[in-house]
Length: 170
Image 1 (cartoon, rainbow, N blue to C red):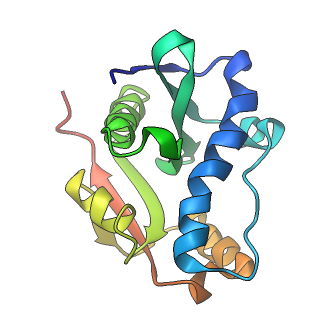
Image 2 (image 1 turned 90 degrees about the horizontal axis):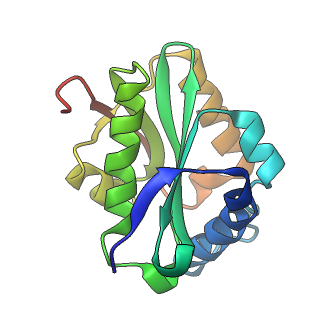
């Protein structure tokens, strides 16, 4: 299945919450948390600002998205989600590559993310896309760690920060 990656428009926003919740069901099944917080609403996601790209499949159906938050001094890949029915087709990788290029085009030299170290479609996947584990070095990332702790994510598995240098992208 071929997809087209494009900037999200208002009509796409209601689909993002459903896509993330369906994709997160895979993590819930694997990690078996006592509680899992639902995906942000469209309003909450828009409030975070940044760049939202969608993967559009056949018949203009949105099957995945990526959200990059821009902060003072950087860009952070906040979420990548693909509908499970469309998993394993390279859509997530295509979204990550598009996010890297969009962040670079917005003037950022690096893109960071936080993820589970030992979930195959998390840190190992991002490593295969050029990201490397790094230590948090600023208040933005330390705030993310605090949020993750308040959500109890650390009890579900080791979390890591990863980053990629965008300066060599063409």
